[in-house]
Image (tube, rainbow over all chains, first blue to last red; front, side, top):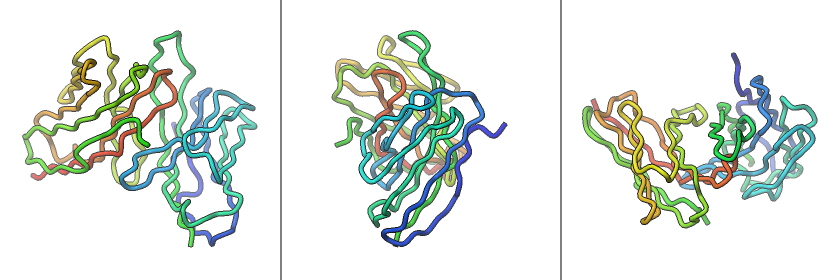
Length: 117
Length: 111
């Protein structure tokens, strides 16, 4: 049971380059999320999706784009990488809300460590 | 601006001791408060969670204490073990799917 799989695990980019991070989940979850983790700042939500074909902005969306063409995949794109985007990126997924008091934990991948020079 | 403030940034505890991590929030609409545990090189994983209609929840050696009037909640790790060495994040949400995370606390348990 793979859960949430992120590729690649590591990447080094030059300023201005573009790349796409891939997240795949095999739990049939409706909701998917992209976070970035920086020292002393915890995890901050970049974009999220509440179902196939939908995306929405999170707390720190600038400089990133996302797509959810298939339910199991959530892609995060950097169009023109900047040093400030050096971070560890985590993808997560969860079931949809169950009633008003649904308690659905988010399941995280193991992260992509991205360095931008 | 973080909506959930977490302290301390790091702590060291002896094996068998108690680790205490504190979090505070401002948004009174928050109604779900989970704690996530993260080991080096891995993603966070849900450890324990609480809703504001209870003041305490215990699962094994891990206990959440919740003070609604003070808008604070804390994680207590009893009988700390070396395997508990990890980074712990508190979080909060008001709709069960968008989480606001604290900055994290790195716990080191010395044998």
